[in-house]
Image 1 (cartoon, rainbow, N blue to C red):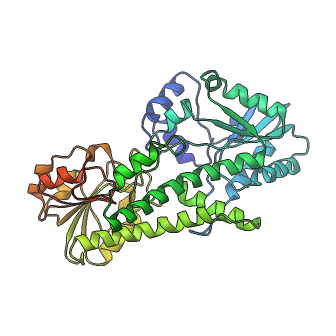
Image 2: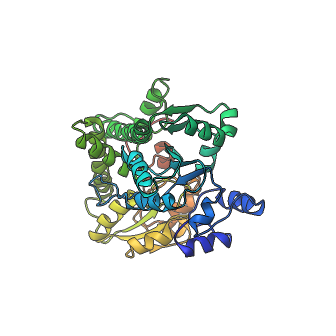
Image 3: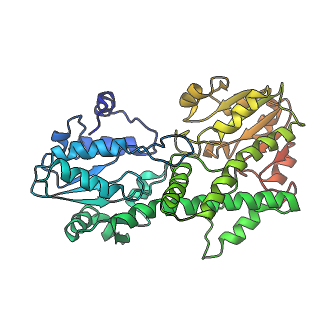
Length: 413
């Protein structure tokens, strides 16, 4: 159920409002087999339902302040309360919300409908954009927070197919489940900021971050995931959730200095990338043509929220650079935000006449480019790899001046 009629109509016609690999086939198959339907009528959606998932947006009230707008959550709670007519229903909060929200939703429902027989559950999601289906089918864990054994029983039934596959189900309190989501994302954000700091240190001392990250990640206590330096984290979760965690700690008289440092490092990293590009162009981007490969905050998504490109590219454009860009999925939305860029349908068109080529997002199609063709098209063979996709020696042998993040020009693989 969604209140936007145009979205529901689009879904009924077989459309998918976001880009997520495999989602169109999954939705079509379940619609065809009668397991999935779409409506704008909450009473229709809740008729006979033993469980109701709340999955509304919780955007930041103002950018950078950490406060979440919970108006959609509370509105949903009141509307759900009016339709709780079953003997027993579990109301499940799937949205990422500050600690204490589930308790407040529980109070709102009970106040609006004192006769309702229900339990509240916090069931945070940990799906990665671009890999959401596989993450759901084969999750690392399922977190369920509640104060009711009856609610836990319903949730075990819902997730039973995953439980049979051996998926750990962590049962805990409402507040703990809500905090787990923020803690997990903050830890991953800290890993990204840490390796970015190490990359910056590598550049200062003449070391190479790639073997450094490999060696550190091979420690079983640490792991290699998220130890990939770049222009900083973005997306709908890490920027919002780290700030929200800081706000939660602040409001409860606690501190989270490591998370605070990760946020600061991430903001500074984008500035460092601007300077890296500017220095590579001889100290000024004015009058230069710059090709950009990738706009989204990560590959396999059309999401531009908090993408590093949205900070880096306007800074270059304001100083007089002409930007010609390509992204497999993000150009439509980017054109609304950065109309000053020239959007092209082919990576090689982006390279044509460019004084520098920046690899901003590590889409698979950028990993095996025809380097000789690129070099022949460019005005200057300058390749700035903000994702360390290519090897410095190989790029130098192909005739490029290559600049990575924390890489040695003569580094071995």
